[in-house]
Amino acid sequence: MEIKDIVKKVKQIEIRTRKKTEASLMGQYHSAFKGQGMTFSEVRPYQFGDEIRRIDWNKTARFREPFVKVMEEERELTMMILVDISASMDYGTKGQLKREYVAEIAASLGFSAAGNNDKVGLILFADKVYKVIPPQKGRKHILSIISNILTADYVPAVSRIDKAMEYMMGIFKRKSLVFLFSDFEDTYDSKMLRVASKKHQLLGLRIYDEKDNEIPDVGYVLLHDAETGKEVWANTSSARWRYTFAEAQKQKVRALEEDFATSSASFMNVSTGADYSKLLYNYFQKK
Image (cartoon, rainbow, N blue to C red; front, side, top):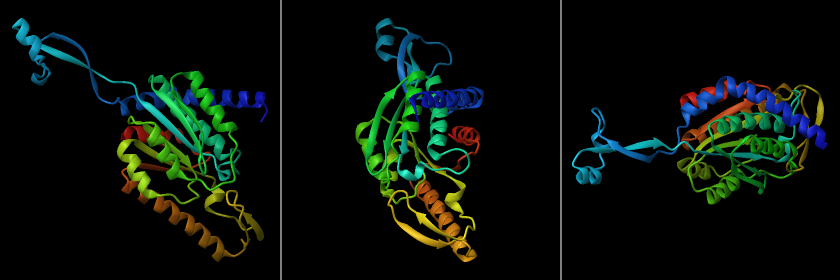
């Protein structure tokens, strides 16, 4: 895309997502993610109904009357967005590429975080980590993240989700909200999911096109794997072949759901074009 097309696309996504975010998601996000704990604010005289455990015993002893510590919620959070930029994510048959759909969801998440004064960072990965944008606050930063997702070079390589997670945990020590976008076409080390979900709050989003799950009857076709380059002829006119393919995809999704559940992480299976705002709203509500 040319620069003017990129700017136009980013602006369109901002307009669409900000409207959705302000209408429903921002409030639910704020309720769901209330920070990392409590921090000291001030000391004041004890009032009837205050918790005993909040008494500041040093000041109470000094002034010979009870004082309590006032605590504030620590509001600032960090959101990390991990996006698979392997070649299979640069694909779509319903008027929107997977990468464009991911950019829109990421924008909605980013603006929700920005409205809560939280930081947002980005990791683009495939067979390795290709780009890292450190967490920052603000609208311009979110627009930069959207632009980077849209304009990344989507590489013909097998995606290594476990490597991306390992990299993130090595760099970002503080507990974060982690949103992992991929079509999960490649295998990964499920042990890394368990390790990551113990440290961070993790949601995996499988972004798929309807043709990823079911291939129509179009006769003999040469199927090309965008990541490995492998090609194979298939007789899509065979009802048995189409059924076997569809069942294999369903089994893959069931295995993903089980992996994430076993790891105490969350998982969504999202088709391009679906109303992601409702899915995110429900996710925030459950949290």
